[in-house]
Image 1 (cartoon, rainbow, N blue to C red):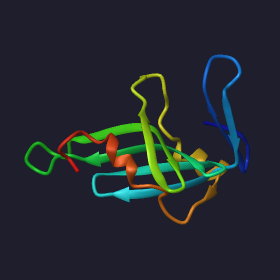
Image 2: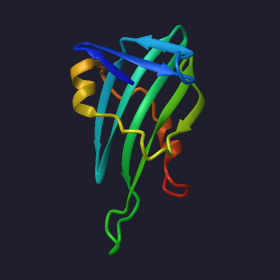
Image 3: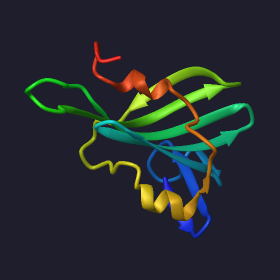
Image 4: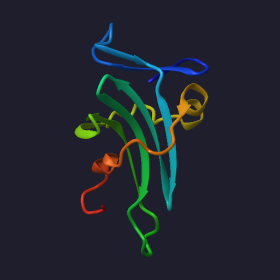
Length: 125
């Protein structure tokens, strides 16, 4: 993800040097959760949508506190149906910068997908 000018951003995927895929434009959405929240950025390529996400969800409700689970990644959907999810485990990858997304992307009406929950720890659905 790169903000290239106010109102313009790019989703880039693949290899070192020249990316395999570059999509311009995009939409952003943000949702607050009890004990967390989620940012999603959506880029369309024909009937395929790439949804970059950063989410924090509450996994604990007892004396141990909130115990947040944080995940970042990309969901790919085709014609509105889930195809795949890739999570980012690289500590050098930055989460979605919500302020920048609001500055560089058009706001969407709502979240683009609920499939990001696939990145949550097992048993916390």
